[in-house]
Image 1 (cartoon, rainbow, N blue to C red):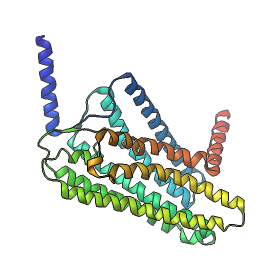
Image 2: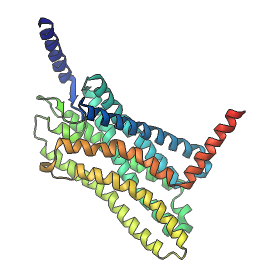
Image 3: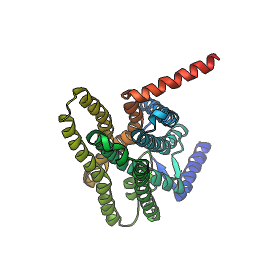
Image 4: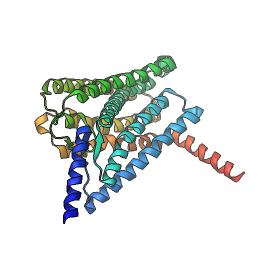
Amino acid sequence: MHLMIVNNTAMEIWLNESCTDGFILLGIFSHSPADLALFSVVMVVFSVAFCGNVLLLALISIDPRLHTPMYFFLSQLSLMDLMLVCTIVPKMAASFLSGRKTISFVGCGMQVGFFVSLVGSEGLLLGLMAYDRYVAISHPLHYSTRMSQRVCLQIAGSSWAFGLLDGLIQMVVVMTFPYCGSRVVDHFFCEVPALLKLACVDTSLFETLLFACCVFMLLLPFSIIVASYVRILGAVLHMRSAQAGKRALATCSSHMTAVSLFYGAAMFIYLRPRRYRTPSHDKVVSIFYTVITPMLNPLIYSLRNRDVMGALRKGLDCCRSGSQH
């Protein structure tokens, strides 16, 4: 009995000391059989996302046939997805398996910065990828000039730059707020809205600015996507070749699937009024764009793409011939 009291006291001291230097992430899974099964599913999804994005990056860099603007943008999307899952899932898994749910103050700040930067960059990139598809389908003769290497680098660079700027600003502001009360974050990673609930100062002004920023970062690229696809649909309807129209729609449907998953989850999280938000809903929906979308993107863009599948078969053939020799 005395030993149990000592152990409980030591645990309380450890938690209190941890709280002064960082936060406690409650996570999303308990240790019930159902949650253990769900955790296993998430880890399988993470493994598929990691391997799929690494493979797609390797194929695009190795195969000269994939050195085109569309695949350059896909490589940037895969890099963002790869960094996103590695920012969130390993820490979540380590906390769940070890039972140590603490995260340092610096670690939490870095997670905020990387997460906001990558989600913002990916949202902008998806919007600009729609413009690339519009030019390819509506103005094929001018595609090489309109989407030159310089333009592609500018598009990708602007996506990364805006995302990084947004992430840096949010990280600095959130981490300068005083947290003098509870340090228990009701989430499985350091998300800005979940952290703001713990601040012991009025954060309403920053939350208003954050909402405006989310509107801009989500609705601007989404508007570009809608406008691009309206024009693409008009161009497809005027195509004389039915086969060419089907190919164009097949290419665009892959992009639209990825866009729907990403923007649907992000808008549900960040554009809802605060009074309708609940931690349980936020945690479940966050799984979509932190784990599921990064897994689906390489599958959507590879399994439905003859060029990527051809590059994969070519790579496997080279591996077989090399092993035989």
